[in-house]
Length: 152
Image (cartoon, rainbow, N blue to C red):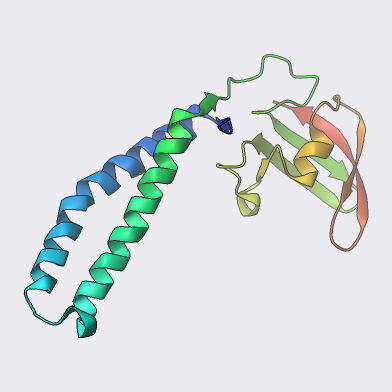
């Protein structure tokens, strides 16, 4: 059974764009390999080795993106604004300050930009919580209690 990937429509569009770009680069990489082969001895041919490595990375990423897109479930914008769900932006407040997170699937997670996975400890702590409720979030150094100020 294949894993379902949760993505926003924006995330799907970005992956489709990346896939299109990678597919268009295939012929360029193949041309580089062909030209590098003409240099002779492949065992000492840095251009050939480099082009083959690039081809391997590109094909691996193409395969990964195609798998994600074949098993994607697009996150619909949640209607409820009183319970934290996948796709919500959540504003938290504590004595340590304010935090803002958007709950996304693991493929789109980018914690440095406030996009956290529903599978992460923070995401799991927030899912299902209600507006105004306190949430304990475990950080590497401590446990911080936040109050949910808004859900959008």
